[in-house]
Image (cartoon, rainbow, N blue to C red; front, top):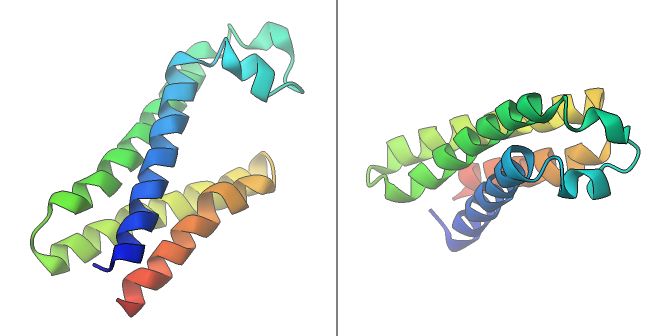
Length: 120
C-alpha cells in the first residue's frame, strides 16, 4: 500500500482509538465539556452506553491497525476495505442521526482512504 494510504488508515485508526478512550474512560469528565448541549444530569446514566459505543470504535481501530500486519496484499486490501467501509457507514449514520459534522470527521477520511485503496 502507498505511504499516503497507510497514513490515512493510521490516522483513522488513531481517531477511533481516541473515540474509544473518550467514550469508555472520559465520558463523565471530558464529555461534559465536549458535549455541552447534552444535559449534564444524563452523563452518568449513559456512561455504560457510551462505553459500549467506545468498544465498537476500538474494534474499528483494531481492524484498521490489523492491516499493517498482513503480508498478503489481497487480504490486506480486503480487510482494509471492510473496516474502512464500516467506518464510512458509521459516519454516515452518525451524520444522519446525531450531527452533520460527523460525516466530515469520520466518514470523509474513510471515503478518501477507500479511493486511495482503489488507485494504489
